Image (cartoon, rainbow, N blue to C red; front, side, top):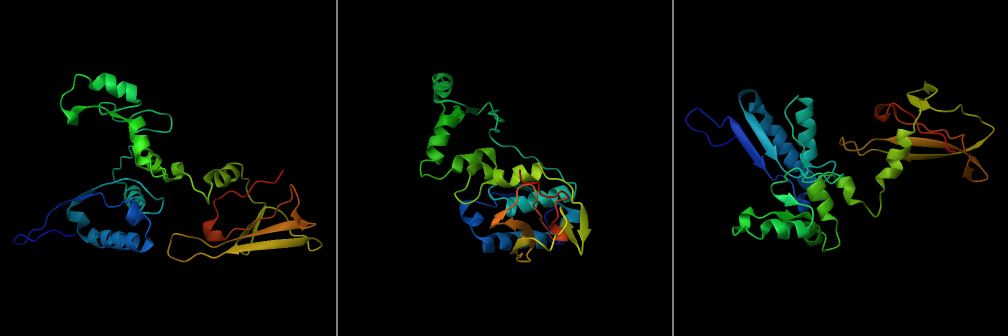
Length: 234
């Protein structure tokens, strides 16, 4: 990672390309190893510079770590998807939206390397195996690929509607007062402790085994509090 030593000199610029792919993204062990190697290489940063290029695949992967490090160090970062959620193409000299557009543009271009690429064809090819690879590779948005087990909108919607807690007790934020005359259910999720997860707990008042609408009580660990509490159930 430091580069080959030439006399008393080492390279003052490092280019890191394609640090992450679909295989490494699925392995937490491989990701942690890559991140650790990158961290160990920061010792020469005061005398050099680096450039990392790659696809943003998982939210907590190698490129995500590099992105957070660059933002924290006030470094330069460019996040450029091939096409955004609204259909705007970043590299319009290379990509077009439909097969018909590509056929029309390419009919007089003999050199295959200079022909326009249809995003419609790219979508068919990348997603042919049933996985939504196109959404990840072109939008650079892991959430856009969706999940059979996790729906991000279910989390984002209540966070957007969240309110401030009414008080804080023993490092727990409360959105309603505890009433000992009611029955409650509590759920706890403990974090692994490696920085990628957090410990949380939630307490709900019950009535006949169901949460009472509009009277929800939730508690979040102080170190993971988003600053706004959960919305009332209506």
